[in-house]
Image (cartoon, rainbow, N blue to C red; front, side):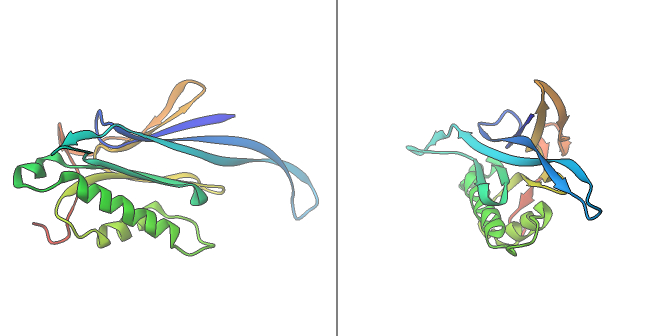
Length: 186
């Protein structure tokens, strides 16, 4: 059995991290000696990014990370309005995702990845001007897919060719999504 999840940064964005969860049945024995079948989920992830050309270089306002070892992915969409103030809107998103990946990789070795704690840690360490939406997903064998989502970044679960779940868009009004902003509020 396969289940596909797409994590997309921003509405109609160019950055996408995709993962496939593959279920494999495993025989397990309970404490009472009875046998049961349990499905083990495995995350297979990849990404696609089509950067825009800005100032003669290929970059964009979106960013993502994939941590295969911890079965966790994240996407962020920097808010382009910052460019009116001479600020690279993508730098905030890139630093946020670098910090999120660092939090995942350097978390407690035996502990489960908590997307909310990861995003909180990443946000507190992101020190450049700007703002971004964000979505982080992790696959846990006991809990299944756990997520945190801010703004119009989000994810879509597809099973057997049909949509199973789409994360709701969080916005104040059209094209005005909730977002994380640099810690000094400027």
